[in-house]
Structures are given as C-alpha cells and as structure tokens.
Length: 288
Image (cartoon, rainbow, N blue to C red):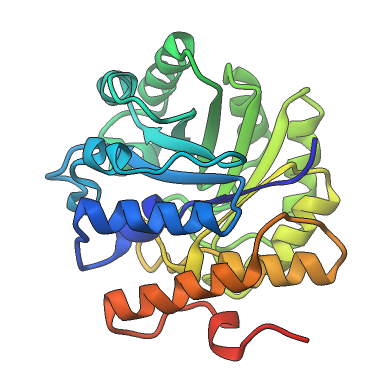
C-alpha cells in the first residue's frame, strides 16, 4: 500500500494550544488540509471538555467537514463512552484508539491503569464498524518512567486487535536505530506499522525517514509543527507536515500533497494564532 500521511494538527496540534479555537475554525483547518491533498486528517477527539477544552464540541466540527475524495477523516477516542459519541457522529471514516506503553502515563493521561486502558481499547476495537488505528503513546520513552522496554511495546502491539499500529514518540526522545527496530518488529507481527514523531529534540525528521526505511506505511505529522501533549511535561510540537512533505518529495517519495497549498495553511494558521509557528518551510519557502 502507498504511504499514508496523516495530519494530526486539528487534534494533537490544537490540544496543546493555550487558545481554544471555535469549532467552525477547527473545521476550516480540517477542510484546508483536505483541500491540500492530505490522504488522512485526524479531525477531532471525543474527550471530556473539562479535561481538554481545546477539543470541545467535536460533533460540531464533524458536521462542518466538507467531504473530499481521497481524504480519510479520523477521530480519537480514549474509552467506550468516547466511542459512543464517535459512533453517533456521521462523517468520520476511521477511529483512532490510544494507550500509553507505561503504567504511569496511562494514569496521568486517562486516570486508568495500563490494563484498564487496554480493556477500554479492546472494547472500542470490538465495537468499531469502521477501520481502526491503535496508537501506542510514549513507545520510545516516558516522562515519568524514563526508558521504555522495546519488548514490552511489541508485546502490547501484539495484544492489540488493530491491523494498524502507530508507534508514538510522544516526548521526542527516539533515535533512528530505535525507530527502525520497533517498526520492523511491529511489521513482523503482521500489522501495518506507523510512526508519530515529535521534534522536541530535533530528531523527528530523521526518525520519520528511519520509520519509512523500516517499512512504515503511516506517518503522522502536524501542520506548522503544532502540538505536544498536555500530560507530558515539556513535550513540544510534532514534526511539521509541510517540512516532512518537502523532505519526502525531495527523496523521491510521492505523497500526493499540494505543498504550496499546505504552506498556505500554515500561513493562515499564523494569522489565526498571531504568532510564528514551529515549522520552518512555510517561513523559508519551497525550493526550487
């Protein structure tokens, strides 16, 4: 299957912003990304508004999404209640479930043990009537427990009942050799592997290339480099989608994305937030 680029900006990007955007603005971001040719956009998450106010009213966002051939829209859920809201909302093509690789991260992120989080994920996957992705957060390092055992991550991936497993470097500590090994081991389970990289320590782009070389078929990124994790101290933004597309295209990897249109989305977002974004390509310009 061809490479799937998933822009998580409308969800993972916006959830770490101090400013909460109106649902109409969030839907406009989703629509602009789809218009730029992104094959997948993570549009919303179904979480408690008192916990993550930036993600409030996902139903309103989905209702304002403009369907576009060639773009798959996904939504994140953490538990069975979130999936009930997902299932009642028309317009999403894929459900994304997530849990942490460590006990501590699950307790901070979802107030559950890892086994409880796994049970919630299993329940959602069993009920899902659309394609599903399972994301393992802090797969390469945890802000509370430090180094994460690769064997534990692989065992967790094997237990998950999803055909597509994305390995998340939530706090940006992975290096290419780690990424290659874990992606290869997940693929060895017969699963479609993906990588979700943060550029916290400036390794996000080389890690994305390493994942691709190891056979990853999904790469997550966030327009403008927006993002982070509210429950991971000092976790800064994701790999910027336009920067990643530039890198991939120059390496001869066809993405199907209109890079100029994508850069224009970051230009627009800079105006929305009134500040410079983390991404670099939209400031430097495309080339040649």
